[in-house]
Length: 107
Image (cartoon, rainbow, N blue to C red; front, side, top):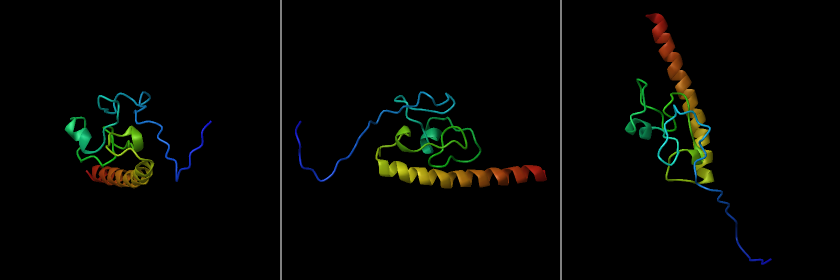
């Protein structure tokens, strides 16, 4: 065994998307990363009457964050930030869905 002095250790587990469990209805790229936001629109996989939120998958109301999502940034801090953003988007999605239901009920 060899010991080396170091100022810190950064663990990089991998950048391969492990999305085999994700339903086929959720759009992914050729490397199995989940498409979100504008990437869903560019892939022509968005069917709702509004634009998708930044972290929203091709299924309205389903969000992805971290390494599973197609993104050039593969860092823990980015994943944590995206996770907190996803919660905010869920609230916006629910508010939009509630407003849509109210509009339809008035008709």
